[in-house]
Length: 393
Ligand SMILES: *Cc1c(COP(=O)(O)O)cnc(C)c1O
Image 1: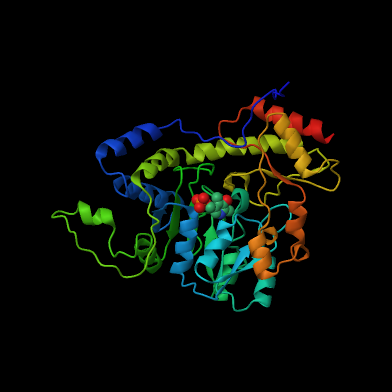
Image 2: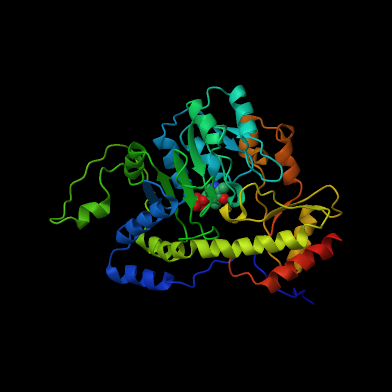
């Protein structure tokens, strides 16, 4: 007989209960489906939300990271620092430009690069051109500090550009500032399971006018004016110039329409995820063999994209068995991440060894991401917690 789990709780679930359908309908009936007025509106709203001078919509966070590195001048053979505990997108974009990633270990508990880890890397690689901090799970790295020893401050003192991977971090804050208003460029993801979604999509923010101009041109074939600007002007102009071999990274208005509905509820969805995180902390803090995430920012500054726990050495089950039992009980989980130093391409190309990343290895031995989404009920949370305790005790 087939085993049917008592409950079905997904790892994540998108919430499209607002104006998503209505706004998409408007786009479809308008006759203009690609980048246009909805995208422009999403950019304006997003810039306002994160208090950035410029917000440029693109078709993924990966595209945003590529354009960000290009705009700060990364070229072939440059060195760019990237944490090992991230998605491959953070490092592959370095390779797009012919530059080389230098992988950094992260702090156990937060999964973040600390100023100490950064300083050590700069000692070993003084020729570094840029750093891509990842705001893992939605918690910001220590970008700035009253003492001036934050990651942005260290980088700028050393002439190093900071392009933030904020795929997990909307909306998130640190030291009273929104993520998106701090680094040289900040890259967000609107992928289907991220904190807000456009199906596929991304945004890059910057306060630098020159960088914004470059990104605007490079996201659409290196053409000197947006298609929509050309066609919306009186006396439609067919004429355009190509000033660089750009990319095809623009966001269609169909996707931007979904984003407009999502951005309205970004903060209420964040609060709903925080409520889930608080429940996990309350119920699971007594479980000896489980290390819960370490939170160094006020809890409401955290975007709560992920709730990553680590099965420590006291656990009697392996991570993989734990995931198997959770699946049998109908609970979806995930792993963020298998560190990049363990991926064949990076490992072989750069001769990476696990022993050079001891903290990431400690995380990797037991990391599991628990279900976390805005519409998750207390009953579902309770079922997940009771199942975990049943497996581990
Ligand atoms: C999801 C993710 C990305 C890539 O986002 P896309 O919008 O799918 O390109 C980049 N970095 C991190 C850390 C991610 O989790």
